Length: 392
Image (cartoon, rainbow, N blue to C red; front, side):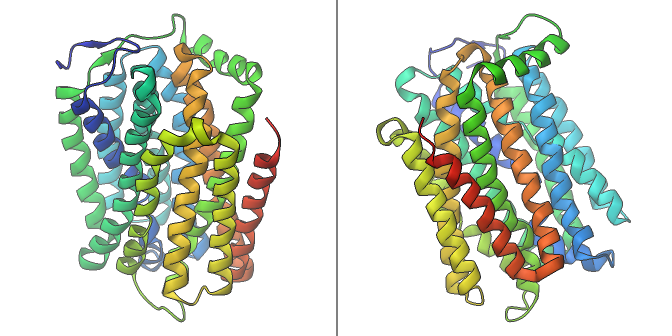
């Protein structure tokens, strides 16, 4: 397929293009998570507090949520390829800037910009939904989401290892190089898709409010997924601090390797996509929330054990994929011509929950240590479960 060709809704997506979408989604979203295994190292480097280091993860999540809200809707108005290339260029610059930063405030600010520009996967997910044949829609969405999840997992492993071997700055230089390479792939292979909206950017943004008012299911699915993601991020935003203390006393490499345990969640995504309509959104949500609660019990009661940590990571990752994909995939059927804007609303709310997680986690850690983090994560999961318990 030529990079200049246009996709037709419902005509199907070539396997090669799906592979490109999944791969670029993975390397783009990875930028959001490189910091997690490195937070303790960054805290020591800049002689800052745990709360200040935690803000690096927080600002990245806030930036991501705002990028979803203000950048992703543009795909209904203009060329997706142009949006992706501009974002990749800004990412390369922000990552290189982080690599040379001399103050933690600079790292925090650049993390915000990295978050804003790392939203490309959410241009690809609705593209996969809108241009797939009906019988392959949820499968193809699951494939792109699997690429995104593999990128998240690989980011933690790679950044942990690179940080331990060559320091945290090397990781950001490597990430900047990956964004330059991804730009070349996008220019060569990503086709354009016809805009779905005719009007101004202001009218486009106002249409988001119309969609929120029109579809109560969009509001409900988004909020309960956001609560679950906040719980999920509570764990990952505090893990580096937990592993640096007794009884573990280990560095970023071990934190990154623990992230690899979440591969179960990435493998689950493509399977969940095939079973959502058969099993039901509500059942998947309840099962995912039950897994989250089980994981927090493991972290809280047996949190001094590597076995419990590994088991908890596997369970919480699988639960998160059950919750996210079951809530997200079927929303694209609400109004196919507005798929980017529907995805924008869902993911903006979703990552607002993700930003709330590191914030609450940092406050809880400062006030009550690991026990406070466990309690906070458990409460957010219970809120998500209460919303999932409501009848459709």
